[in-house]
Image (cartoon, rainbow, N blue to C red; front, side, top):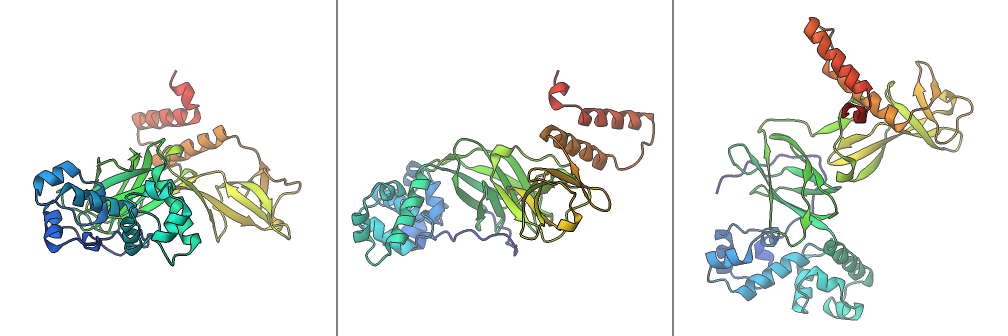
Length: 358
């Protein structure tokens, strides 16, 4: 097996720890070694393994044993459950999250004696969620095929971290659309995958992602700066309250007032960071606001104060496109051909995309 590229520290949210194969109740050293020969080292590995292929490779493993191990691995995916509690559920006859989701409380209480009802019900709720959402199985490597350990992976508002073999598994994803995958390793680069297929939880297929092998910042995009963002349906939306003042070229919409008259205003331009769309929210002092301001009004900076404005979604999109062209061509045209190229780019940006397709 290729040697993994060592992980580096990141400031990303840490994903839940995936149990090793050795945490499976009753598994022997010989069975653990057999699974290792089949490149299965964690419970997540078991859930992306083809049962028939493993049994062909390691005939000493029995179908019943492998089925039980995969059932334990599936139970370990219930949010906040411990391997010990997953083992108690399995010992009581539960073979999957679906069985937990459909069980009555009395049976669960008997299996999980001493566990608070609130905890049991939270596990049932997540078991239901797992049965109605999807998964991305993936592997992150460098161009030479070496696996990348410790890369942060974001998709659909959910985070995961690659293991020593570059593998990751992101769960609880909506099944009705592809997800946007954002991958980052501070020493080895970043990757944005705008349309990653989301499969049902039991799917074995995996996706491969390649990092460039050099330091890069995480992918961060902003409509205010003219960046083109991925399709909105591919990820979740979050809001972020900014501590400072908005940029002078931002356009805000007032959504409410604080006690004392300060405005709570949201940028009309979306950001995209860590695999999620971000709405930036600011507090604008009452003294800087125009007279007659109402909730839902747009405001823009005039150099000394905020003034009332009105922008449709189409006009905001046009401003984003024009700002993108200005970033692409920051300098004056060098010759006639360069001038024609810039003019064409500005004309395309200023027109409606639907008109461009006619």
